[in-house]
Image 1 (cartoon, rainbow, N blue to C red):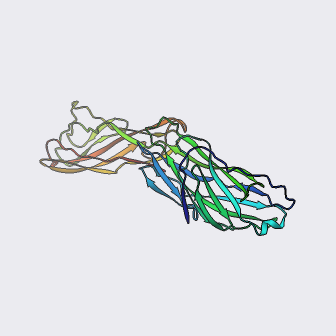
Image 2 (tube, one colour):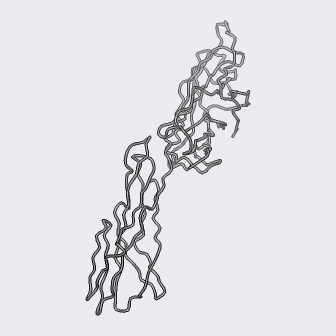
Image 3 (tube, rainbow, N blue to C red):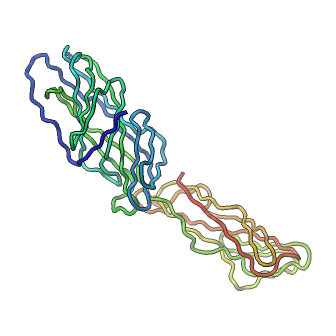
Length: 330
């Protein structure tokens, strides 16, 4: 595999000299498939560079803390054909790759490429400053051949002013005779959907309040995710202070994006006199879709309640514990 760096951000095309010979070949850039990086979660801050393999299209993170959610191939296939002349059979093809247009969204200009043979043979390649020259073995007349390109794609972090959502970075492929002439060009696109990172913040603690132990048998203190508290058991009483409150969390991320909120089913409450296991219930957990639409911040609220078993020998005093609520994009 050949890897080349792009060192400038402007488009520079090789000059060509028209050839008037009746049998000089000409080339057509027939197609360039989109290199689709799919869904990418931008880093909280700073740039992330993703690299796609020319051969397989697989993607790895070169630097930064962004995450790619998709697993589709992200290389491009370029198809070039030669005209109906015998000169096609014996003459190498000169292909140039230059940056094109302006990137949109949170992706930048590609900073490097890699090359791999398809049905065409790449004989050599080199960087010429702001463009790359790729030499191919002859393409037989009235035939087409392909080669593959992988890319280094920079993605801006969430501290960028650029919008989330659909993003594109483009490049220009030109095929011509090595001596100039017979040329054709086509723009190729690298596409992605870049979304802001997901986060979760606690806005209220889970507080079951103060209760008495049952004088016989067992009982419970139960708090719904909606904040309604109740007790059961012989002579179990609840005091008005401190007030019982369900835990509250706010998940933030890309609007309209699917997430999974993981809430534990139990937590241990401990104090100087012992411990007890609380069973937890929630609303807003599991599979959720953030409010709003792509390009804006979306949220979902999560509430957690539960129940604590009581017996005549339950530990006295203040019992405390910690729960961990997690969220991730689907």
